[in-house]
Image 1: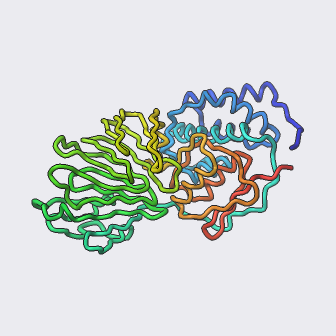
Image 2 (image 1 turned 30 degrees about the horizontal axis):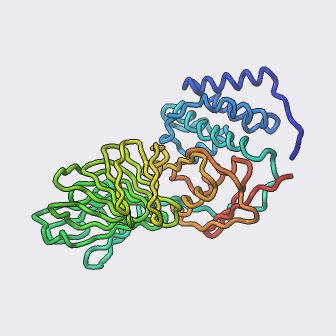
Image 3 (image 1 turned 90 degrees about the vertical axis):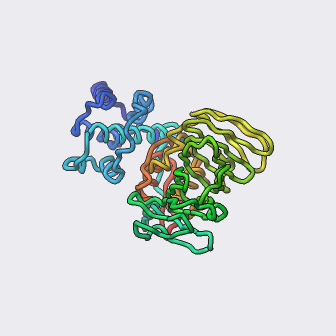
Length: 400
């Protein structure tokens, strides 16, 4: 580690404080935004700026409008603030606040991890990987399949009194044209690959969104007494209320019973635990003879191999990030981050040498190319990446 330090002058410290206050007050201008990041990019003041940002991180607004980030522009502005001028966006402080929220979180992580700058490992971004998108396979009751990513809007198939259509929003809709009694025993499956997501409106009007590498099995039409589906992976549900027909979501030995509510289930086979998170309404969770009620804002943690459950308050923003086309990391370790990238970018990951022992806090849009996400992670100062042939190579940053 290079022990040489640079002292910021009182005037520079006061100016940085002033810039941060203007950011918090949402009054920062384009020129001041450029000036703020000039301090970050200046190697002469880097250590002092990081310390300052760490000290003032709590002042950054937690409700910055991260949904409005244009990632490519944001990253270009951080590395080359001159590109800021001439780009249209609305209004400016929203963009600046979101970008500053992300960067402050990243640099705070840098400061909390191992100190010191390191020599860059000989890894490179030889090629890039585009983000995932609307991709899925619909398997009908007769075994025939429909590839949904390239299907045109309109009617896709008919199963008895049920018409399956793709609407203008790109989602699959099951429309009941008659009694549909014969379709109650017919099972369809909607499955997304790695790098895919999709949504479906079931015959009762309930809506389901599937994350990458997920699937849902459901009857073409629900019977008169109950509505039941089976999922793998991750799905978000908005269930139509029907007091006479409870809605059941089955995942392995776990079952969720609802009458009408919004909730998310994360149950990937390669995760060490599954999560049921309730956004509104109420649900009854059952597993191996044990049942418990869940209230809004709460989450149940469980595993397939154990009967133990744990209920806790949920970080709704983090849980719902995938549906809102975001990565939201909250002190997330490198293994968990790489799992998300593998699912969304359909890549493999390998580690060279000692695995970096880092965690990351920040918000990144999922419509970013994988190289931009990795460059953001590199801001922690302890890790470098390379990309080649859809393989991410991760390496602990070598110290001087």
